[in-house]
Image 1 (cartoon, rainbow, N blue to C red):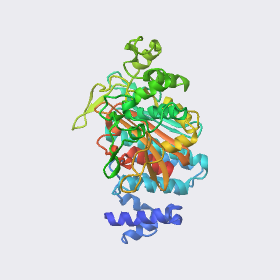
Image 2: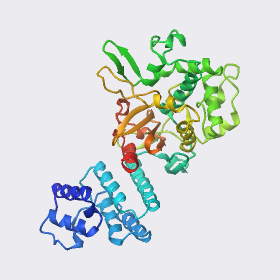
Image 3: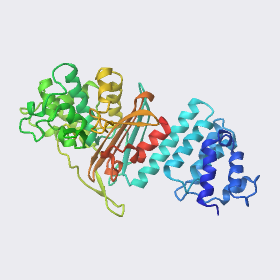
Length: 440
């Protein structure tokens, strides 16, 4: 049986030698070289290699047949099977990287390549969902001017056997921040707010009275040694007062107006919106919001053995840092409006997507409403949300590629137990998959 070193030696050949990766026979040869007792001209070596325990060989064979029907040479189609099923001892990241190389080198045309990448993306997302025990999940990939791909997985309500859909409403939790940031920055553009305005001007009794709007949006504080980052979404709550002071509407009404303006029919400004006092807040479209809330994904918790149980949402109202309800298709409209200059000027968005400099002279993790990072030397901005034992979401944007991925789930499996709050985007296997396939 070949050992791990043998596998890694072969994988290195596949990842670095385009000639080797372009022909399955060369892969056979490379594999044979890693263990000399295998006949160097035998294509049967793969039968001696243990497959990954979670490999669906029938699915992979069907994929190979599909590739062949699209114009791939049969040996090249078989190569994809090897990438899908053969690299069992390698890490997930290595398999994803190898698969990315295979797609790049073997695709016969851009159209076929895009279809293959999205098929692969879908299959890996489903595998990750099952591993994370996420009951229902919706994902969309958005291009520069349209939704490029959308898919839903699992169930939004297990007891009633209701499948998740891409228009299923989910709790956004912390992703609500990016909508709040857009509203605040629009007020800054209009000259009604300043980023250096302090919380004391908005909410005098706030424990963060000396913090500026800039610091709240970027999760930073000014200490003795300079600017420091600490992710605490609840600090954004005074910004609801800032938006209200700017717009002359309640924060909830301002969010609702934005949802209507962007044509987001499956979005609701808070789970309690149909019960608010119109004298205190505003008169919402109760019937429409009620219909959306009836379709809200049922939340689930997971115990130590991975068993799912129906739970309840912790957030019961809308704040500047949570409570917004939306679907991946609705969020796509927000994303397109934001990136195409309909919500903010280009220079304002660039400012939001620029990291502040910390006390050590290095960029901090969070801009204005968004985490800011790089991947493969390209800028990436992102945000996540999590409701403990109930919900989770993540949005990742690669500005130079003109691509965004948004995912929403009815458990906390997209974010727990990952260290996303520390700025570790690649801790998320879902984000990592998107970055490997579409950004690298």
